[in-house]
Length: 211
Image (cartoon, rainbow, N blue to C red):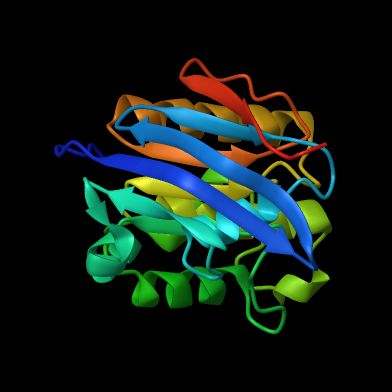
């Protein structure tokens, strides 16, 4: 993580999502600016993950628009994706690779990599000494830490995190909350879902879903 000098904003206008003929959410509007964190809340099946996937460009909304710095995302896709880090509900790591190899691959694919010692990044998430073992041999919580370590190796503005605290112990949860606050303090922004109440100074919440 490093300081972000430019001001950014994300705006969601009249977003609708329909899945299997069921309206998950409709006429959804919100905005996010530099230094803000937003927790998306809602019942299981209310569309939280669907919303995050729409924001990442992995799926399309039924209706509505997404704006990045006052321009429709479709017109500035490369710029938008370069500023986005997405960690889904599943860790998104390769089990046959080591944690070090997973991070090296993620760093090579990043549009805005940070010069950081990858072993130091793993140390920061509590995985020092596990850098050279197959990731599939790690516990679910350790695999989640490998995934979250990707946030340390790229200078992205917008973090989109789907249940980032899954399988983490209390110490690791506090660590990630501190990361989120530091990211906001340095000019970043984040949108996340969590059944855990996020204890961050810069966090607000938004409830979605039609039931």
